[in-house]
Length: 367
Image (cartoon, rainbow, N blue to C red; front, side, top):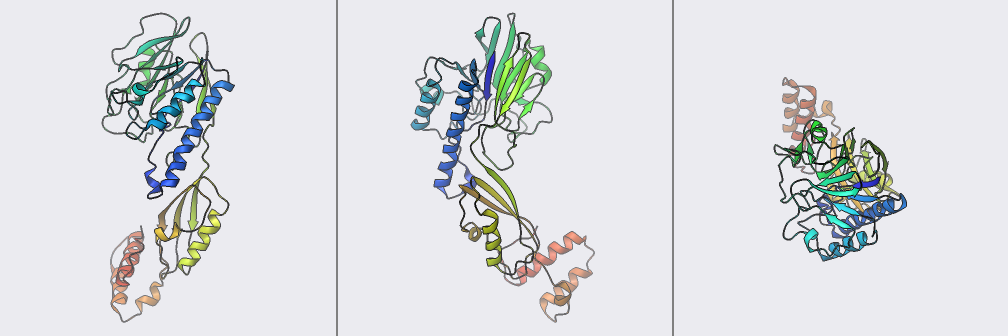
């Protein structure tokens, strides 16, 4: 049995980091739709027996009729290939859910109960799935559960593995928590999961990760899984890149820049010919007169669909020896700081912040 698994697509995500750039946010949301198209093609091209989604397919708080129509048609084009959807905490199953409003083709099955319920994939192979029925579902999906029939058993749900797993959604009350050993104890051979955006493959469970870019820092190996289930319940996985967004995480060194124009020129050269989305972290030691205003830097021409700029370890170059000799307020300030018992890093921060404040500067707060 060959299955394609994906999760955490988050159609209609707001992409708040783009700020007041609605066109860029719409382009990011279109990229998520294009990614789903690649997932569907992967299922067809790999001759899969079913397509599985482990939740957070879309954003319940933001979806519209166009998204509903898009999903109806996308999954209908796979008919008769079965599609199994297990709603998560962002696309939870409720009275106003897209899952309820959609006119699904016969090949689409939405798990609607908040307890594991079975569907037969083929003789001797059962898929157990459940739905989040609220945006904060904290019950353990495996608590008190045990399979009630023979054969091979798989699970599909949106849940939090207890223990040291990286998550963007962590907190004191994780969504649908479970223990890894609980999978085998429940009589399940493997669990296909959503919720964590960082991919993880283990003997008894699989997190595919979010298939396309949502936020900077996403794991580079995110994608979709083609899983081949053996007659004994073992799972062989192949990971495929299905995302369409090219992502750049860049560093801009502004050391020796003498003016804001120097910084703009370096940024323009760094961004030249790049497409997709980029995050630029500014670091280095610019001249003391350089003004670093991020809003101004975002206006540097580029071809990107989305650009984020942030300050990293920026420390203005200071001619401390010259300033110390000045018979001025700032000269006395520097002499006092140098005489104080401070760690070197803290001394540098105090000097940079204080001198800029004395100069009436508000464009940069050194770390």
